[in-house]
Length: 224
Image 1 (cartoon, rainbow, N blue to C red):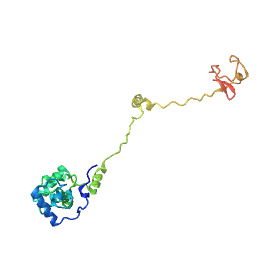
Image 2 (image 1 turned 180 degrees about the vertical axis):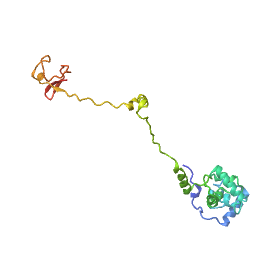
Image 3 (image 1 turned 120 degrees about the horizontal axis):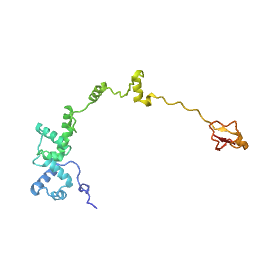
Image 4 (image 1 turned 90 degrees about the horizontal axis):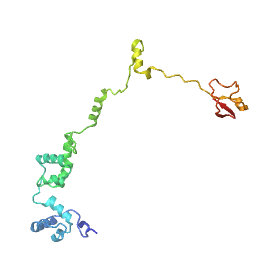
């Protein structure tokens, strides 16, 4: 099992830091250095967890911290670094001596973000903002485009030599489909039904009959 977080240890203060706690932490670090933050609270006589001591020192008690408002030069540098690095606040803080990552992040969200929006820039992409009005204007500009994709085919008039050339070029268009032929229904032969042979005269035989036996048709023999 992994060790439990030091902040979950019993008898650990989690409220605001007092002036006495600040003085104890500063005196211990000045005398012994930062060392191991997990064991530092007990050695310094503080009822705090190591994480709380580290954040208190890094963000508030370090002697090299800058106090006061950000300068215009710092604002410009933060904007440029954010355009290159994004929300990597610890990397950005390394380029601004005396400023912490948490301080820069809070300053970005409360001041610089609004400043960029007021200048018409997207705080995330650093590009011009696209408003609803611009989208409607862009749509209106494309309203004059002719999107009619209808294909029309002009054929020459069927008169004179032009008509003959046209029929020769597109025979499938010029030649109408042939009319459907007559339906050939099977002829019922009662002579076959009565037992006569095919060589005997039969008045119901068509001229094109082949005289071959094909089967029964509704109870009678038929041939085609």
